[in-house]
Image 1 (cartoon, rainbow, N blue to C red):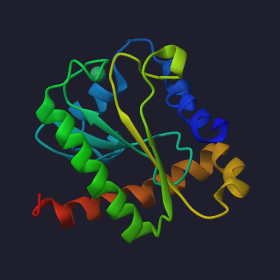
Image 2: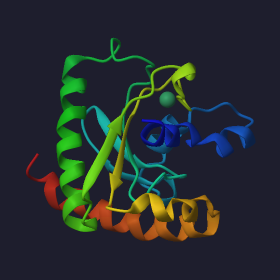
Image 3: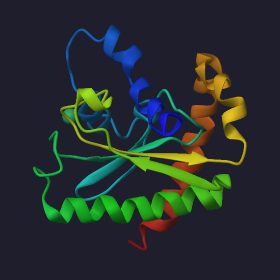
Image 4: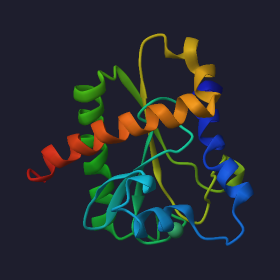
Length: 167
Ligand SMILES: [Zn+2]
C-alpha cells in the first residue's frame, strides 16, 4: 500500500514552495485551460481534467471539480457523478492511447492524508504498466518529466476530443 499511495504526496510540492501569491493551482489551471501550459486536457460541465506536473507515472491525471471545495460533501451529486463518468472515460483513453495495463485511482482528503492542495478536492488517476516500478526513479528527473509531459499532453487531449462528442 505504501507504494500505491506515497506518490500523491509529491504533487505540486515544488510549485507550492515557489508560490508567493497563494493562488490555488487547480483554479489557476482551469482559468488558463486554453493554454497548453496549464496542462488541462479536457473540461466538462462541472469538472476538468489536468495532468499532474510532477507525475508518479507518465499519464498521471487529476479529475477536478470546477468548484473550489475541499470535501466530497460539498460537491453536488451531479458533479460527483460526472467525476465518476470521467474516470471511466480517462482510463479508457489511457488504455487505448498509452496501453496502460492497470490504474491506481484515489483521493487524498486532508493534509494528514498527503493532500498537496487540501482545499480543492481532486481524484488522481495513475496508469500502471507491468514492471513500471523498476524505472520509477527516472521520473524524479525534471527534464525527463517536462519532455514526457508535452507529448503525453497531446496524446491525452486528442483522446478526450475524440470521445467528447459521445458524452
Ligand atoms: Zn481551487
